[in-house]
Image (cartoon, rainbow, N blue to C red; front, side, top):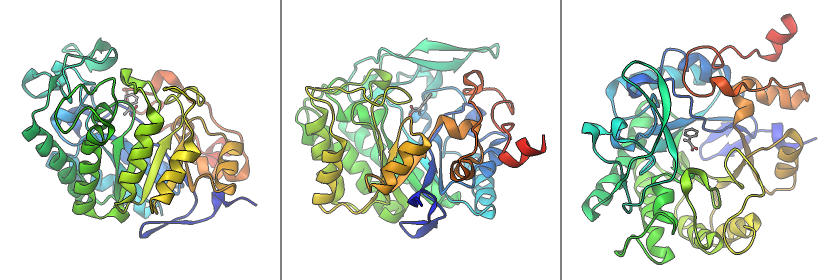
Length: 375
Ligand code: 8OZ
């Protein structure tokens, strides 16, 4: 017997199992409003203990890719209400991932065609996805960002809190602060992108200040029981790097332990890739990171992610290394992943071609076990 398929109390809600659908960008939300098939997509996946939506922009400025959803328009909140209703009616629970991309954007995606914003004017050597005037899509280099002023940093912290409130209004059970994968929070945290010389740059406690302020503001807005946080200590995604991730995340662990949170969600290794990828002078020690958090009094559930198989997930929860395991690509292809894992049934293979953009194909047409058996 394994704990993976047993219920788990997360904040004030009871999850039916410890299998989580990871946040997955799908680029099917024109005008930042969840598209026509989003209700069906999330409803099909309500067998997960917890669903986390794709990254959802807190403001127009926070958007970095074509057709990702947001939480800053009334129509988007109305559209999300239909998603959360459907998931709840199907017996599931759902958080939304609140996201500001910082420098990982392009002027054509920004309000008034402005430059994207970041801690410092350091361009990411990475690409983003835009849709051209003729409807064709393509990858473009990210634009040179401009550094946020101190005043704008304060406003941006509040933008996270407003988005969190909007999420609750839309019926979400909570929000996950996207602090991972080299987006705005990661850009503040990591030495490769943060060259500031004020209280938000330089030593670790300064680079972590933005994250801690966002956590405080979101917890004040919606409560710690409804706040999760995603972190990626070593991923190189979006050209992000840090000189000493172990020291940085040791500080982060202690700083966030002072605030109530529902969960901490850790991406191990390179996002969507090598689990053993690391940065810094020594291989990153995830157990030490978790211990630092617990020793500082942190009570949140511990969620792990990146390339988990059934066996790895069972081992992680049964050894108490983690409370919850998030699956990404496997959830794209297997709407009933939790059930399939429980039965140790065969899995559908995800089709990379339909991950980003498009319509129903590769989105709501992967068969569940019942459908496969009937076929
Ligand atoms: C894939 C494509 C675009 C964005 C992340 C939000 O990596 C993303 C993302 C993933 O966190």
